[in-house]
Image 1: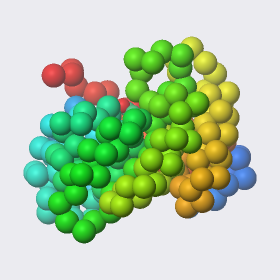
Image 2: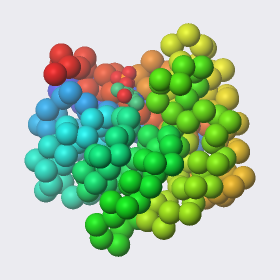
Image 3: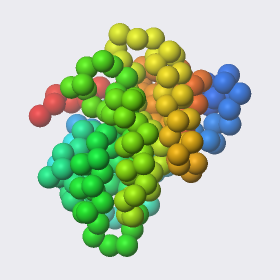
Image 4: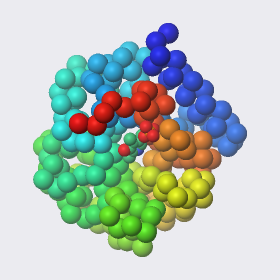
Length: 227
Ligand SMILES: *Cc1c(COP(=O)(O)O)cnc(C)c1O
């Protein structure tokens, strides 16, 4: 087995373990492999190992890789980075799901960027810190953003996304996310996705009900220097 294959199967075993400890069915958990800064060839290798969900956090890299890998037509691309309104069209053309909708303006731009009759899956990114400069909607504005997204015909509100703060126990942070997810579900009953958990904290995220994990370096290996 290659290093990537070994790491992938070790992480999948750890995910299944964490799910069992939490009394959950591992089949209810989607493992997204975050491939940012790695070449398209690595994504192709992951695809050959059975990976069908990948994540990118920069629009240009997402667009370049989706173009290069257009033959992998059942590969699903998740955009997980901060989204700029002037990039909404490019993001929409390349991504199947956008995890980082955190304000009405970006939701509007993604909606207006529709180019066919498809519906784009979106998640509301929640800021778990007190620093408004970090990505994410403040928890107090979550319901109004959810209500706004529900008015946009080409977006499908799927749930919430969050990154655990560095200075907080991830279990406590993800417990808060679970509560925020419930608040969104009260408005949008179908929006059941919880995108949470990365290399360092996916077990805690699973214990708190995460449905979508975004795991990078534990599977891909260390990221090359950021360009
Ligand atoms: C890079 C990134 C990840 C994956 O991080 P790892 O620690 O390498 O698993 C997950 N979520 C977001 C938003 C990221 O930018």
